[in-house]
Image (cartoon, rainbow, N blue to C red):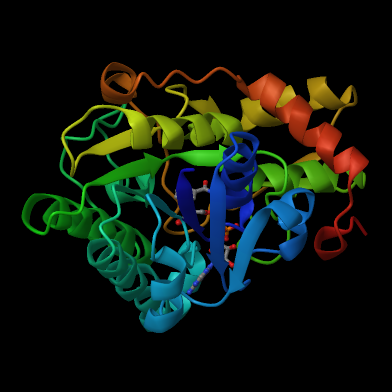
Amino acid sequence: MVCTVVTGGAGFIGSHLVATLVERGETVRVIDDLSSGRETNLRAVRDSIRFQRGSVCEADLLDEVVKGADYVFHLAAAASVPFSLEDPLAVNAVNVEGTLRVLEAARRHGVRRVVLAASSAAYGDSEALPSREEQPTAPMSPYAVTKLVTEMYGRVYSRLMGVPVVALRYFNVFGPRQSPGGPYAAVIPRFITAALAQRRLTIYGDGAQTRDFVFVEDVVRGNLSAREADLAPGEVYNIGSGRGTSLNELTATLATVLGVPLDVRHAPARAGDILHSRADISRARRELGFAPVVDLEEGLRRTVEWWRATAPPHSRIP
Ligand SMILES: NC(=O)c1ccc[n+]([C@@H]2O[C@H](COP(=O)([O-])OP(=O)(O)OC[C@H]3O[C@@H](n4cnc5c(N)ncnc54)[C@H](O)[C@@H]3O)[C@@H](O)[C@H]2O)c1
């Protein structure tokens, strides 16, 4: 039976990946320190997986988890731009040193392929849109630097150290279980929870800024293809929808899904926010067979349904 490790498997994206792997009948091991993930994210599959609470920075623990595994999906990370500005050393320790430890464990145990979660943040505020993998990178935060370093290590391990690695630059992933809480929350869960609680939504700037929102299940499919496709190791792929959506369009679509007008206010733009982001996904289409199937409206519908059905304790709507 195929044995697969998911680091960060209790997180938003990781927990969806774990659920899919379990459905496929694989042996699944998760290592997560629960710093931002929740055990409740794995409630439905808890009895079908081996869950190790701990950090990817703990070499012995990680070694135990990776030993005997065929594949590793490495998603564990301190996944926040603002936090990386506050504490770059802490973010570097998890994202860079932690990744190195994962790659070393994979090397020691002869893992067949490692799929890394990289980020569109590598592109910075590029004017060349849509962003293509081969264009120059320009990370604008310590977080973005760590994610770029991660994929560069992936390339080096692939080419020189016998560990096949594929890195996926996710764009703005959204879907059920994404945390709406705290100062670092992503825009979609923040907007949905505010709208459901009939609170006002705040858009920073004029709302014309665009993002490439990609539904979490499409990202899971991208990960599976990256593990299975016949490709040159060490490559990097954009995983997005290929569409740019302005925040004004986003709130309009959300209003349609909810069937009510939303109370939106505009606040001054935040320093450092990028203006536009959109993926060119033609390389992923060509080489991974990646094709997103859930559009923004349908993804919002499913996410809103989940919020209506579940109010996890960590994110209860006030
Ligand atoms: N959500 C997005 O839009 C997006 C975009 C680009 C890249 N990514 C990347 O995707 C991955 C998953 O992100 P997410 O949105 O699911 O975030 P998340 O915070 O929900 O998931 C990260 C998981 O890693 C765990 N973790 C953190 N530090 C750890 C450590 N030292 N050891 C073990 N586990 C640890 C957390 O507890 C959490 O469960 C991250 O690598 C992130 O950088 C996400």
